[in-house]
Length: 102
Image (cartoon, rainbow, N blue to C red; front, side):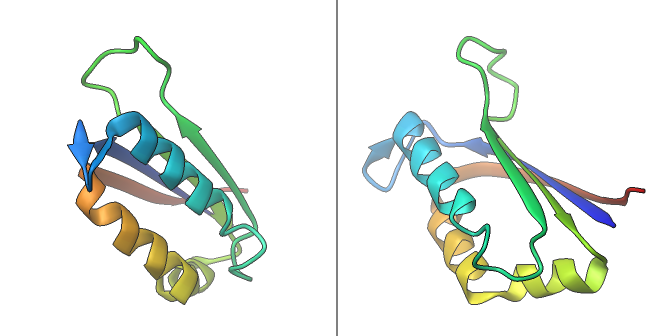
């Protein structure tokens, strides 16, 4: 099994909205992928705690896939591509790790 963890740092303002609103909208869109992308076995989306260090990431996505091929199918699925297109102008940075779990 593959665990896919992505950390995002958002801009203070983007696309006419503040960071908090963009975080909420992004979290909703990521949660909506569950049950839509067949290879996505499980996902969690969390927004960072208010008052945490400013250097911390703002949002984390944790998802599980059967294998790397399944992860690749998720990455290229039209619903996931649409969320990525929505997010791209809102974020300052993205960091990812994919690793095997038992």
